[in-house]
Length: 169
Image (cartoon, rainbow, N blue to C red; front, top):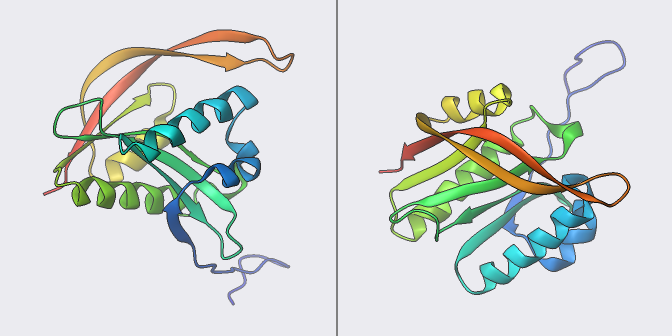
């Protein structure tokens, strides 16, 4: 144990990366709205068909603290990382790095040698993480998806993404 400041201590907790399951979804409410979790449920159906991998970084108690997917249907010869999210209270603790490295391992296990992703231009913190992990920008693309408002209504969210890739050889 090391003291970080008066009354605080550093705690190291092992994590396990495994496939996300539908049984995990009630414990993933922190990751987004009910509409988002419906989308994740659909992605788990695609995972069962082998089109995607959807991963969870879990505590020793089995609780997901980071989740994200790899889609193998977006780009020929690559796995496309998407919906990467870390429990807000645990951001900047290395869990995103663990999740991304596990996703890259899944891509390699399918015999693919390239990982791709899109990062919102309004999210420089995420882009900095991807760059630290070896991702390189190669283009831009607009993106959009439905988001749920507090009253339950849906609105279209539009953004510009920087496209990034990494050679996994």
